[in-house]
Every structure is written in C-alpha cells, then in structure tokens.
Length: 473
Image 1 (tube, one colour):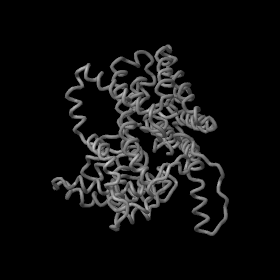
Image 2: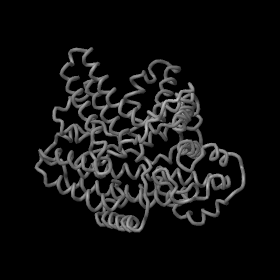
Image 3: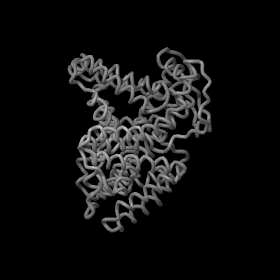
Image 4: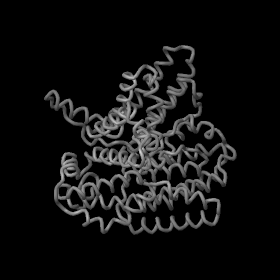
C-alpha cells in the first residue's frame, strides 16, 4: 500500500489515526503495532513470518544480551546470533541469486537459481533498524525492551517501514514509553504540513519529471514493458543528458517525498524522526552531498561500520580502507547488481579524493563547486539506474560521453520545461526561506496545506501508474 494512493489517504490513514487517538494511553503502542501489521500484510501477507521472525530474534537476543551482561562471551554470542538471524534473511531474499549467478560465471558451475524469489517489503530498512537495536543494547546505549509489543511497534511502525528514514531504537525509546500526552495539537499540525509537503514532492514533482524519463526508456510494470518509449539507442547526446537530469530530480523528489511523508506521520503519532534529506543538490562537494542525502543510511553506516572499524583513528591508509568498505556495502545495500557496487565505489573514489586534497580546492572556489558536484551526482545516477528495465548502462554512458545525433532534446524539452524548472527551483533553498518568512501566519499555512492537498488529490484521481522507486529496496 503506497502512501500516494487514495486507498491509503482516505481509508487506512484516517482510520488508523482515529483508532490511535481514541486508544487509552497504555494501548497506543498496541494499536500502532496492529495497524502497522495490517499495513504490512496488505500487500505482503506471505512474508508476515519473515517480519515476525526478525522481531522475535532481535527481541529475545536483546533481552539475553542484557541478562548476561556480566558474561562477555555469552553477550557476544547473542549479538552474533541476532545479527546472523537478521542479515541471513536479508542475504537470502535479496542476494541469493546474485551470488549464484556470479559463482556460475566464475567457476563454470550450473547451480540453479532460486525460482520465484521475491524481496519482502521494506526488509532492507527494518533489518538495519533491528540490528541497530541489538548492537546498542550490546554497547549499553539503551536498555533492552521487555515488552514485545513495544518492540514490535518500533520495528514495523508503518510511517517509516518501506522508505525510511532508518530509525534507531535510541531515537524513539523515550517517546515509545510516554503514554500520556504523547500526541499534541502542535505535533499533529506540524506532521500534517510535513506529510502534505512530502505528498506534493511525490505526486506533483517526482511523477511529473519521471514522465520525461519514461518517455525515453518506456514504462515498466513488474519488469515488463507496458508502454514503449523512444529507446536509449535512439536518443541524441543532449537528450541523454536531459533524461538523466529528469532522473536526478525524480529520484530526489520521489525518495525525499516519501521520507517526509513518513516523518510527518511519525509526528502525528507523537514520534520525532530525524530528517532524511536536507537539500542535497545545493551541495558544494560530494562530502557535503552525502551529509545531506539519505542521512539516516549514511549515519547508520558511520555509526555501526565506519567507527567500529577504526574510523580515522588508525592512520590514513586504514581510513581509506574503512571508507572503501563502507561504500562497497552502501552500494551493495541498494541492490543485488554490480552497477550498485560500482556506484558505491564511484563515490568512494571522490570522497577519498576530496579528503586527500580536493576539499581545500573546493573551499576556495566561487560557484563552480556546484557544477562539479552536480556533474558527479548526475553521472552517479547513470550508474545507479544502469540495471533498470529498459536501460543498458554501456548504451547510456556511450550516449552521454560520445557526442552523437538522434532524437533531439527539444522534442521533449518543449513538453517538460515547466516541470523541470519547478523541480530545479524547489531543490534550492529559496522556497524554504520564503516559507519560513510566512509560516508563522496560521491562515497562510492552512491555505498552502489545503491548496496542495487539493491539487495532489486531483492528480492522484486523474493519474495512472505512480511507482515508488525505493519500494524495491
């Protein structure tokens, strides 16, 4: 069930909020847990057992880690069991066939692929969340959760289940145990505004610029072509770059819009999720870009991989190795395909380059740093999208970097110039600054909220297929 659907907006969400608000204080977590399970099972009921297993493994191991805190060997054993249990399911469902294909290619084996293997909804997100809990319990950062319903509500909480942000238990532990006055009117109002802005990002901008991209590669449902496009092999170099500009805007508005909707719904429920995007396309370096893009994932890898490996405390060569490991894993987390690994290592190269000397050069620049950053980011998205249906990475890179003719960019630009301009404008800090000047006026906030909701609903009713890009991760 996607957030940007009439079913969710007019049935599931209002019913869930009503039940949640009417529940007695000590029953709110139970209501949230049950409603979140309904949300999860709506489209993925066959994977309910996987979700239940992840909850039980980490809940039990968390308690045992605390119980045997004085015994380092047992404490470490239960941590290893929790990580192995969570990662084992992720590796099986997401990476089994990838490993089999590569083993067959490298060694000439003929191991059969696992048939009908489908990735459970949100497994990459809730696996990392569960792991962060048991690791934090092991490090004595948080107490173990004794109430399985409270822990289950944390893992399966529907606002952040399918798109993040990746919420650590330590970030909501306190709010999870506040039973009275968890929800306040100011939180609800702020949450509604955040949800509305996120919905507008997804429905009005992301879906709009995505039409340009799908006009080039075609539209796919379930991996099958449902509507033909121009075809990458037929586009000119300028149109290839225009298409990648559209994809660059699409992935930002799609993912950040979903995250903001989740953050807004969390606020309506009385929880404070950290922002996941902070205007990444205004960055002046790749280092800054990754401080602004998918912040919860970057901070997770920093906290649970980079720092435990030694971070920058063991000399420059070791630091570079740690950066390599983190970005290899970051790329691999996004998908079971080599293009995602190349994408992660691509950013690893530029981050090491900037750490070595480039940041000092960029600090002295006057304007060109933005162009440098966006050029690298756009090429990075070409690597990222290289395994999508309808996209051949060699063809795409050839079209982008070997000047050639084909269908003119003007052919599509005349139809999409407006939405591209809107996407570029709202990726800057100007709209936020303008809104901050008037948001203290209640009537202005109400007009903006109702206006955006009305437009979004109109588009949702009239629109067709509206996929969510990170749904598959």
